[in-house]
Image (cartoon, rainbow, N blue to C red):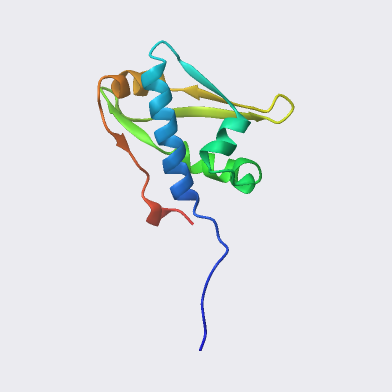
Length: 118
């Protein structure tokens, strides 16, 4: 009998969780053009999974920055860029203004196709 299992993290699930957190942030802060998160909050978001909040965070954000929103200019990414600042323990997100406008207008978020990623 052979049991196949993997220790491979599910980055897509974590990215989805992060995007929903960002969506809530945008709803609560309608004037915000960028977002700054304390990495301790990200640690709590990922249910105290230290790997997701540290080592795997870049991989998770690489998927999260592929999420899009339908805008008048076509589908546009929500996250233009991100920067992890370990010294200040923060995550800075530069958000796309057109995508934010559409998101605030009630447009749905378009998830990336998980089959196209390795």
